[in-house]
Length: 356
Length: 127
Image (tube, rainbow over all chains, first blue to last red; front, side, top):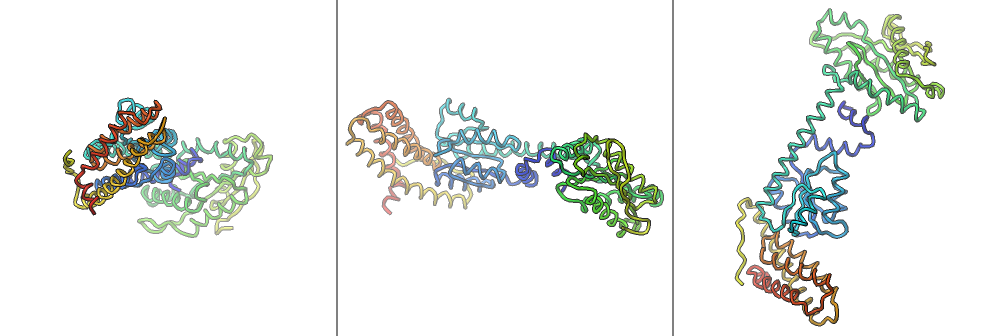
């Protein structure tokens, strides 16, 4: 899962559908889509023809409820709606759109025969951005929709820029992995979730063996390339949508595995070590063989999960495991249990020559 | 009353013209049937006793729909006449007026007259 998507889902997991719509919006800025809502089929057809001719993409429906269903699944930058319609009128539609779609802005144009000052104010107060009388010349209606297109495009650009800034704030620019800031914010959330639902949580502390030698031998460019490949491969080896990887130092990474016990964490660690020990990294100067040392820890027993474990305990245990793997020559995974603030080795796997 | 003057549609392309023409013809076909409805409603109104609320409400609904369509299809005189009838029938419905309500009759006659005077409407009616 790309970091920007992961960021959204972690920040608000209940907004999956909204994210889908938002992504659709970010990926396809053009053409501008207009949803026409009018209970008169000939008026709808006429407006659709006009808008398509002006290079808008057009959806259309005869009532407010169907309009809301369309907006739930497809992002329409502009909503062009009549006022008086059966069941749900344009004002009610407008109010619901404003309350339900505040994140993904919909520019609402009310197109109606009601042209009194009082009606105009009612429309604007309900949340319409523009209020146009049906008796206005076609050129004016189109000109106002062009204004809507310009404004929604500016809003789209700002949203994209904001989203990119948010992504950059939580990712490492070299590798694209999450950074320490992301880890600091989201590991406590994972821990809280684990404790609330009594689900296991595992953490792998990973370090590329003899990375300094790779840098010294081939230069920093190759070292950077190795780091990028590490992240790419590691991300491909963990579960999309739940597991995540953060860079915590030069060649140190942390993999967070929700819903995973020690046995599962061992399997994940073994898979990661195989990915590198068995497949050299192709670089500009030729293949570079690298191995990875891993420290494993997990909260799995009910007692462990219920204890008020601190993030520091979890990280300290994983680091102990990593240290043990390094002391044994690298290319190993060592599991260490978090237990009431103190740690104890519970398993080791791997050896210098191969993968266990 | 003469034929309706149309605004030039500078932005329209050839395809859009074709589309507009076919939709406009469809709209004028609807005008013909609506004119029959309005004539029937005026007959019902003339026969009605006491407060003919349902007739006023039907007039409001039909006049509103006609006003919106006529505005979009650039039949401004029809749109204005329909708007006048919608308002008059709306007021009559709210005030529980009798079937002799002058404003409703005046607006109804004006609308039917305007609809009958449309050149293209006549053309549709002949076909």
